[in-house]
Amino acid sequence: MLNTKTIFNRKNILVTGGAGFIGSHVCDELVKQSNVICIDDFSTSHVENINHLLENPNFEFIKHDLTKRIDLTEQHELDKFKIRFQGIQEIYHLACPTSPKNFNKQRYHSLLTNGVGTINVLELAKAYKAKFLLASSSVVYGPRFPNAPRFTEDYHGYVDCNSPRACYDEGKRFAESSAITYRDMFSLDIKIARIFRTYGPRMSLFDGHMVPDFVLQALNSKPMVIYGDETFSTSLCYVSDVVEGLLKLMNSKEYGPLNFGHYDEIKMTDIANKIKTMVSSSSEVSFAKPMLFMSPLGLPDLTAVKEKLGWYPLVPLDEGLQKTIEYIKANQFILQPMLWKYEDEESQTK
Image 1 (cartoon, rainbow, N blue to C red):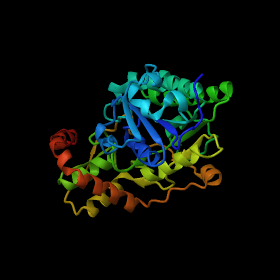
Image 2: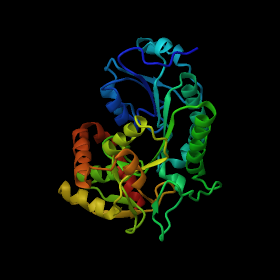
Image 3: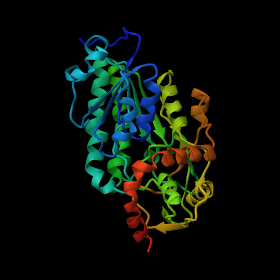
Image 4: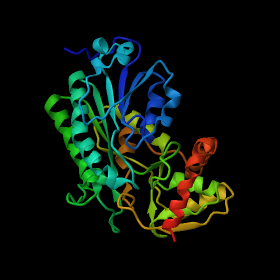
């Protein structure tokens, strides 16, 4: 019988996808007071996101594909966390390949991760009676409708289960169904967060997310490429706000699902021009063919999360963009060898 109670000063917390964009920021916050076990397979994440944590005695990284089961008691690097005696108290499940530009290459892995991977992590929650938070997505609502652009959590959505995107969109729905089934069948404390578009330091470059690419393109006087036309609009929530929301949900009595995102809608052309001004760049905005996975999505209704958790995004766009710019400037030396990829970006616009 696995021990599930905290018997030492620090909780043991598992973060799947912990080397990813949002996951690495979650690890940053959790490691301040807890032991953090980060699992990732680097399918769309980067070791650079967690390099600063690898020497922290309260952090441990395990490279593992979650579509294959894992026995944490057999991972000897975790002996220092006394898993056999204390177990795992919380699990943040953020693992899922997210790559707009390489979406087709990741379709099979996305399918398995959303399905088999989620079940495997839920089995860990069941074994340890751990609190579990599923990082779901706004894609479960389907496309935006002009007459109803904002989604409330009780909207059932419309997702085409036969579309090329279904491995991710329908996959997130299946993950939610799996989480709810485990909660009901095994009396687990399971929560669901539906995350809308998020930005900030550590977003993957040259991957279609656009905002970090805008910064590096502007800093190097390259065209700022929008995958779509001048009407492309979205909402953008700074990563620290999302992380605060996830931790609030985990530490609350709420189950969700709850929306986490920013209320304001903004055009990508306005974001690009704002970044251009902020870095005093001569870059021009250009347009490229839209991508399957990078499309205008609905906007979040934040009424429920504000009432139930007292959460609301606080970081203004200018401040968030400035922090993103500072991060990319600070890492220019690392990013410099990647600049050849701009030639591919420019060729797509001609």
